[in-house]
Amino acid sequence: MDRKHLVPLLILCAFLIAFPWFVTPFKAVSHYLDVMVFAGIFSMVTLGLSMLMGHAGQISLAQAAFFGIGAYTSGILTSRFGWSPLAAMPFGILLSGGVAWLVGIPALRLKGHYLAMATLGFGVIVHIILSEEVDWTGGPSGMVDIPGLQIGNWKLTSDVGWYYLIWGVVVLLMIFCFNILGSRMGRALRAIHEEERAAEAMGVPTARYKVQVFILGAAFAALAGSFYTHYVTFLNPASFNLMWSIRFVLMVMMGGMQSLWGAIIGTVLMTFVGNEWLHHFAELEIVVYGAILLIVALFLPSGLISLPGLLKRSSGPASPKGSGHE
Amino acid sequence: MSEARMSTVGEVSPSSSGEAVLEIRDLLMQFGGVTALRGINYRVPAGIIQAVIGPNGAGKTTLFHCISGMLKPTAGAVIFDGESIEGLPPHQIAGRGISRTFQHVALFQHMSVLENVMLGRHPRTRSGFFSTGFRLPPMRREERRIVEAASGYLDFVGLSDSAHQPAGSLPLGRQKILEIARALATEPRLLLLDEPAGGLNMRETEELGELIQRIRGEGITIMLVEHDMNLIMDISDRVLVLHFGQYLASGSPSEVKDHAEVVEAYLGGSE
Image (cartoon, rainbow over all chains, first blue to last red; front, side, top):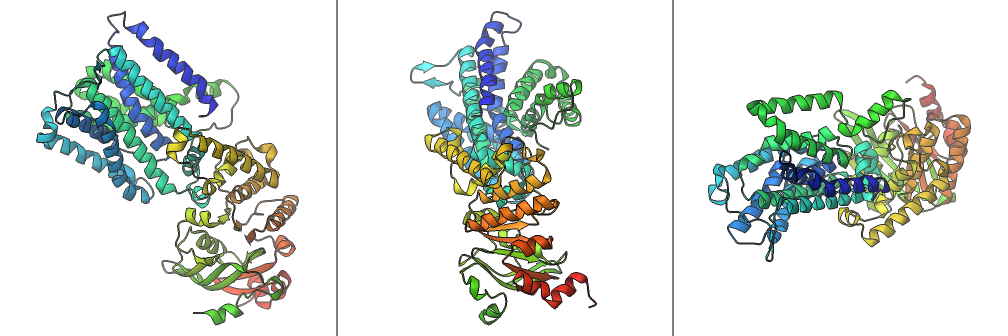
């Protein structure tokens, strides 16, 4: 991992450890812990998506579908077949990764944004299967009786326990991604993003790496889906539709896709905004999302993460273009 | 097939009777109805500086694209070290030992000078997503070797003092040199330089000529597309002249210089 990420990571950890002490004593905000668990689960999805969008230059509109594959695999294997959640989790990850491989290979061999189109279609298909395969998934009315997370006799029940587990996993995934980005593979991804022709001529198998990052993102999403299943213990296809895929893309864009920090910031912020305030708009929620997307794209194309730099530049002398992308 | 013609066209002179590192047979490259290259047969002996010249539109860069895999020839064969490589993707051709620079600088502008050269080590290293994500010990050792090797190449071309600057902040002349260092880092046996002196001043061009000769000294064969005739005459061992996508002449620089058709092609004599 690049040393420059060490201090921010430590600050994040300190914040995460301290957070429950600030919110649990106060009734008005004590449910923030629950919101943070969801934000952490969604962060696993957006970390993988950020690798794909910011570093492999591709957009996926099927992250909610991979999230759903992980969720339903865990749900079905534990509730119908009595598997332990810990055994079901890797199964969902493998299934999701395998499906991503099948979808990604034809779509990514072609140049341009064929992946966005292919995943758009794929996401819709998955949502239809989840809604129609009533025998397996419970259909539109959903799936109940899913066990919580249990290891041996020890059962994870408290919100605080879930909070620390989820964010512990998020921090580990961040370190994993930072390790990749600070190495041979990360250089190859940046090279593809900056000058694909030259990367290819220097021996970087660009198509293969794009597929691999896509698979990685699908695996992260499935992991998140599995945690989600055992946290809420109830599944409904509506949590895995196209709207959610767009929301994940929006979270990454909002925070800034050139940095994994952008994904985390965007996800936490959007989860709080969505949970706490946006539901007041009811059906108009989608309009608000559209407006947010428009504002970010027009005025803050590099996301919230670029704000400090922009403020510094507008007050100080012009600095050379930072380490962002075009 | 065309063995007979092979021996008359582009035959190696007795003084440099080395093995051919590259052999091009009946190369045809068409884009729709336009023929960019036709009937090219040529052998490049190992260890030389092979210039490729010709007026604009003669097909020089197209030839490089066909060799490096950026274009798939319509017909014909490109044989590198005795094996056919036409139609292979560029990254595999790089792995086999052909590297290149670009006519218009194609560096990774936001990466540092050192990182650009480190990227050149890609085909000679192997850690994947799994081992880099978990920072397994073999990956850490490999990463150290990548830094060492890349620093060595920067030393070789004389860019060590700019190692940590963003590549895009270098002046054009040094960017061109950096592209060569990045290409060298892939450990090529054949290096394709597409107009390396374009945009350089006289002193920079002279230094470039010395660098290219030092690279030949390392046993690397160089193919050079260039418009600077002084540079060509100074450093190349053989010259291939293309004209409207076809073979026009080849030989030593002085032979080519006196070749009547070449003079005509360049001076634009009447058809």
